[in-house]
Length: 339
Ligand SMILES: Nc1ncnc2c1ncn2[C@@H]1O[C@H](COP(=O)(O)OP(=O)(O)O)[C@@H](O)[C@H]1O
Ligand code: SF4
Ligand SMILES: [Mg+2]
Image 1 (cartoon, rainbow, N blue to C red):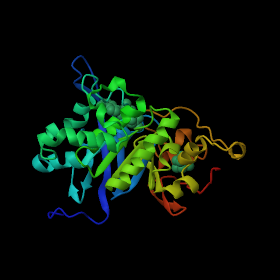
Image 2 (cartoon, protein in one colour; image 1 turned 90 degrees about the vertical axis):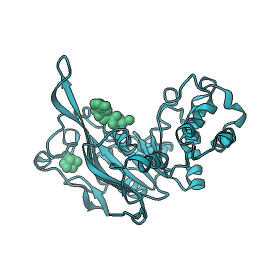
Image 3 (spheres, rainbow, N blue to C red; image 1 turned 180 degrees about the vertical axis):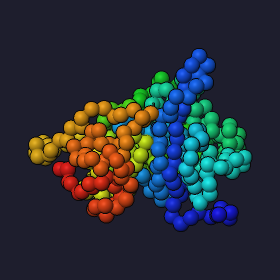
């Protein structure tokens, strides 16, 4: 394949049919497997260099599992993924070490993802202990100060502990740590979901600024479409382990064709009171079914107001059916959700 290490065109990441099933075990020694949680069940997407791909879906649809597989923290059940044209799921040794610098993650909860007994300087500088080639010992304190400055924190606060910072500041610490090894891709797993709305905007703006400054590519995970709109170039909507619709920011927000995307959009808060009155709200019936035993055919059919017999029999492929972008619905049709 791409033995020279050259990237395949514009795509920094190419993910194909990625599957991650977790065995459900029972018995005294948990030896008997009675089924599988189909957390990620055939996900494909490309991430272009410098681009942000938003990944959106309700809690439990497999977003964090996808992130864990992309971080090489969980082995996939099947499927493939390339980073700069090379098979990233097979990487070992020096190549895997380099991958662990190139792809970083920012997690949702700054309260639990930072070690409370470490100073901020040690937290942000810890990646240099593992990858000393990036910053020789004598230069590390200076690098940490620079990183704190880049994320809008006072560089003189490097001897403080996480509890001495606010939630938004803690997320900045997490971002500084992710930047330490000069990554190319950052997987952001709900980085602002635990923050107040006003602080969310500041952290999102920071992530946008850092992206332009360092040419970063983001996979940006959220459970709410409103959070990712501003930053995303493209958006993938997930339901029960599958991508049900994918398109540009404009295609997803202005010309959604999958009923699930339309329902999610209709739940986004509308700031303008006049528009708020004009919008139809689509209320989804029932809960998300169990990923251990998902519905036959279209997984969304148990909550879909458009479901027909064919939806239980045939799984709809993710393909272009309406409005020029892929949608996994037999009856995909464009519907604009005001605003
Ligand atoms: N390590 C694990 N073992 C078993 N099941 C898991 C594990 N991690 C996640 N799951 C299950 O996989 C599904 C997807 O979870 P997750 O990826 O965390 O979703 P999301 O991030 O979208 O909320 C859930 O049903 C969850 O309970
Ligand atoms: S395929 Fe059928 S059940 Fe699935 S989203 Fe489309 S109309 Fe609804
Ligand atoms: Mg999650």
